[in-house]
Image (cartoon, rainbow, N blue to C red; front, top):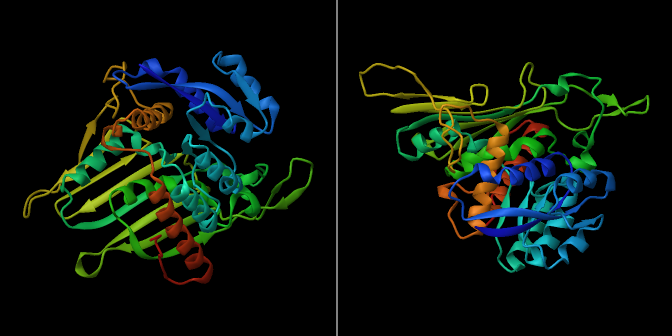
Length: 381
């Protein structure tokens, strides 16, 4: 099996998830290649200790990402840094010629995303993708296949949501995702928007105009030093738009909520049509629901237990349950498969073009929510 050497820039939570996925590569079967993490980079040296303790393959540790990019022994990069750093680091990774899987949202705002896209146009043409793991759940893949098959008929509505609840606690200490100068003015949309846009954009469901309701409920948070500081970003956003024109148009609803009472990292998709409907939620990770309707016939939702039926085959028996770490592994399998010349089994990670389109939606939604009006979405040309 081909070995692809990786460096990690940003050694926090998601960097550790990638390292764990790479360590589990034997869980996958019939793969073209495998990742090997050989270098790590973070401005906090303490974060790199976990990698060196657990990954004997790591031979380079540095606080300077440019030193990592200068290493000729690295073929690909996973970059997981705060949003404000994307426009600085991603273009340099691209210019280095190394393949890139970058964390969402691929730039703190639309202007930063444009800088990344310009670097891509001027770059050597290597594989570049954006992270988004939730659609790799088997139930989500069933909904996508159902929609691709034409089983929906005329579409009535599509809704995709990502809901958290931890921020309902007003005493939760502030972090960078609550700071406009680091997270960006999108707030919750910047952190969660790619999750809810991935499938609609992949399916070609692009809203021409959007409205949005933005909620900022917690206005201050503890600063960790005994005081409180402003919590600047939006807590919840509900984006509504129309896809298509005239009688064929249908509503698209995108929900990114950080204060969703009782929810813990819940991702869901629901597609409703005149001939069929389907839905999946990570609340019930082994099931999906669907309905097939014939005019004049019964309207009956069916529930199917899927078990572990993943896009990329694994050693796990089909009777067992799929989870978040499995979705991460499947996402990485898709990226590595493309690196090795495959087609990601028909469902790749987010493309840069899709990331750019999602910025167009979020930019319009931010204006719509702040100004209380419907705004046209200006997609990149």
